[in-house]
Image 1 (cartoon, rainbow, N blue to C red):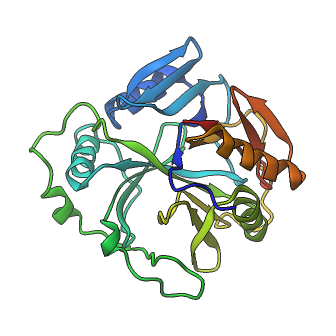
Image 2 (cartoon, rainbow, N blue to C red):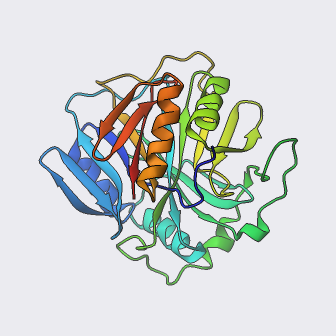
Image 3 (cartoon, rainbow, N blue to C red):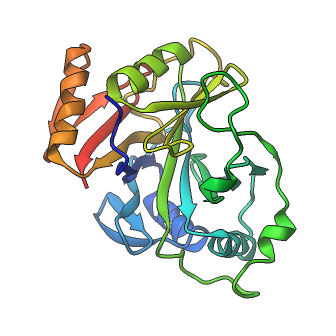
Length: 285
């Protein structure tokens, strides 16, 4: 029942309050370019598939203390590309909210104009990932201070490129949920992600193909927080899982229906809502 090793993540769809402001932020600070969209929507990417799709809803309020997005994470192909991305944030005077060494990766954190969490990170080679240090874990992960100077020393030049590296991809999505056990049962037993590691008893990480995580879930905002609202709030609309074969998408759909989840067909794939009210779309890559 595990998801295939070839799984990758597609675009994260976000509700924003001011489309022009958000497009400017993702262009200038993150280095993405608009690759499609219409008057109320903009698809942003680095030259490949769409990474972030922005949907404008005037008058939406900022996300509050409820289930939804903690952050989405854009994965750089190597340390120099990540260093260049961080220099770009400096050149645009974009504030950071954190910088962390996770053992498996080096990461920086920030927020977009509507408060949506963003992680920019680069993986260490798999052979250097920490060994599991807890029963049932498949990888070791931790959070310690990042050696920022060592990373920035790998930058390809003193001035950042205006555009993000074309090898930038969606690496993982991390969600606030209301019930950690319910989220685990759904994403592991129904969807088919492998449980990789737990942190502190209040966060779990899931992946496919041995990856440290394509998905994180946490109850850091509290157990029993309200479900994700259906409208009127800036934040995550849905995230996307891409599978290579229609048969792989169909297998997940059948498991979701067998578990009693409501499945909605869309564009050759389907969407399903997790126990915290957060939609995920499965499609053929």
